Length: 269
Length: 193
Image 1 (spheres, rainbow over the protein chains, first blue to last red):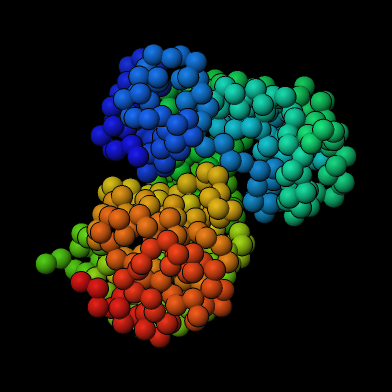
Image 2 (tube, rainbow over the protein chains, first blue to last red):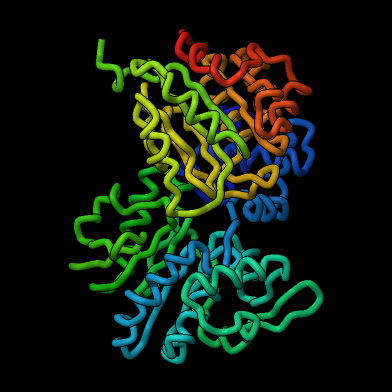
């Protein structure tokens, strides 16, 4: 097991050598991820783990891929998507052009869910979905539009609960334990790496979706990210968070008004 | 001395349960002392249903306040916290809660083992782990971790459990301080120093 002091040493190394700053990540969770990787890759000692991370650039890529949590689902928390359909999309439909940012998109399941929602609301043709993550490997996976078959039954149930009325399987082609989503979706998606802890805004959006990312950040880093989102949202734009996350602790929360009981806020000023 | 709730948190009890445990909690919680000077954390395997009334149900049968643990929330003495569905519940060194949505552990999220380990890293020997009825082997590893750290361990007597597998796994792994039937549990928790 990696001790707290050893974790601090690693965080300093990584910041110095690679420029990634994990110092303001929530420690209990980060330590679990470190220990998981340490065990998974069978390091005999902390010293060897540290040496490998410092000296081996390729291993550091693996480190970044493994250290972030990439658990996601299509139509995760279906009621959330139902609220997007009923409350948010009708407002977005009044814009000539819709820009949406999925910050921390992981393997892209929620990006494709959003594309399906837009298509069913007849808005996809005038929308662009920007999908970013710190982890370049998951961004590549997301961009492929290919997902494992094994979760499709659950995703299909989520889709129906989110207010979907079509046959979910009409959105993908199945084969070889994998499914490929409608490739025409990709024309409306832009994938890129982006580090919320260090980089700045790159556009203005009417909707920013960042779900189950902020729980991994300490309060100061959360504040940085809230400011980044505030600066990247048009007036009357929407910010959507994970089911156990809140804008309540953010200094900018006074500018926002919650939409119903879901974790969706609208920027009022 | 400051008031109860604002006192520094020095120890805690973590209760893990799965199938057949809700019934046990509803029999144990009413008998807890209203002046308990430490927090209790409950990790109960359950369906991710947002209309779940677990918080309400337990609050109605317990003399202490019961609430769902929130991300970054500081723990308070005399409060009973339940893990939200679909997240692992971790404890930070400053005695605040942290939610974690990473992979399921032994098909479970929240995982009992994950919270047992995280809480023990923070509370060291000042922890009691309690393992109740259930159908899988979640919790056994965590009970060993607690025992190795010098904490106290309590396992529901498998003969008294609706589903004996989970407490039996623990008994195959460690020799706990207490193997108890349900009516005996509250008294032991109430007497914790």
